[in-house]
Image 1 (cartoon, rainbow, N blue to C red):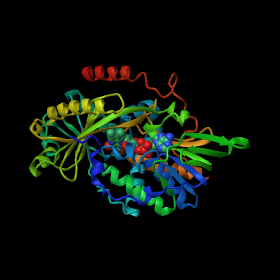
Image 2: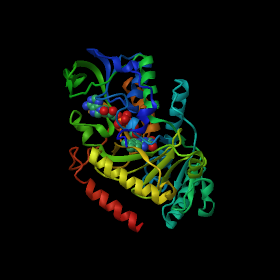
Image 3: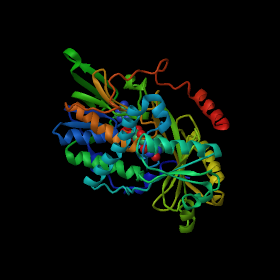
Image 4: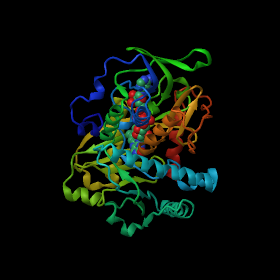
Length: 429
Ligand SMILES: Cc1cc2nc3c(=O)[nH]c(=O)nc-3n(C[C@H](O)[C@H](O)[C@H](O)COP(=O)(O)OP(=O)(O)OC[C@H]3O[C@@H](n4cnc5c(N)ncnc54)[C@H](O)[C@@H]3O)c2cc1C
């Protein structure tokens, strides 16, 4: 079993142009910290409007969540439609839901205009009820989606679900035709190439160690890396669930939570076609949810929050065996199928489970997508870049008053308690 993302084996092993940047610029308009979807989308926009911009990525292009995720481009946000309405009222909830649809249009437009070869398709998604009572919840979601958000989805009863999903472990489905699928690693590399074409410098193996505000009013920055210092007029922090002590303010606002995925060996045609006949993206209705899909070479990718701790070799192996057990509970016919890959990644959570972007002190930031980041990171990266460039941006997720989490300094001591709580809720809900 290979312990790295399956997706990494789907890109050519040739060195990318972006990886060859060995000498960092000494002075730029904007320094972007983090080379995932957020940072690269921002850099592409800034370079297109004429700014000099460098992306500083500690590891490799998209090394964080952007090359490790499930590739599910989903409508909506992490919070379900009912919770959005309950918490924010109908008008504000509608704006938030529409922001998710808008982010998908931005993603699709970018992929098409930059001709990024990442296998994007409008596959649709399946939300599968893990318990009979959860199908009633899906029915309520359908009502809110139709009435408040004017967004059409279909319910499929357990008796008819085999046309969508080859499993009897679920109790009916909600199907949303709008969602999409892509290969996340190919997408992030395509985005890096697009940013580079626009004129941005994308530097890998360039960890930022410190950001210090300079000059009267702190209107310039010194960005310290082991490869030299850079003077920047603005900085954008785009480090998501991989934010470290170099960015202490952001670290007090994002909680990194591990999510894990296994990929089976390629399945025979008929087996893959029986599991997900329409090749939709799928996830279930538990708090500790599972998500799954078929890849272009007919592997089943099966993911979940099997371990709450962050990925390390022992947690990845433990998570892989939990995920395999759970996969077989849903698809027992795969008992003799091998697992070729297992990996994990950090998802950045926020206290209110919504993404945030804007200004934090004198720096800009965007992140906290809570596992729904492919389209939203692309969109908020661009939108926060518009603000850096001086454009006013009116968006429900722009937040210059994003509060730190009380009693939290970046070490998520409370995760075992939260994990135990949700495991309990999965038993009783
Ligand atoms: C296992 C998993 C499955 C997921 N599945 C889905 C899915 O199916 N659909 C979906 O929409 N979303 C999914 N997500 C979430 C999605 O991947 C993220 O929301 C998105 O990739 C966030 O992009 P980002 O650019 O903000 O952060 P990242 O891609 O994490 O990039 C941050 C980068 O910052 C770099 N960095 C950190 N500190 C420094 C520093 N000091 N100096 C320089 N660089 C630094 C890191 O190396 C990292 O590469 C998933 C996430 C995971 C982990």
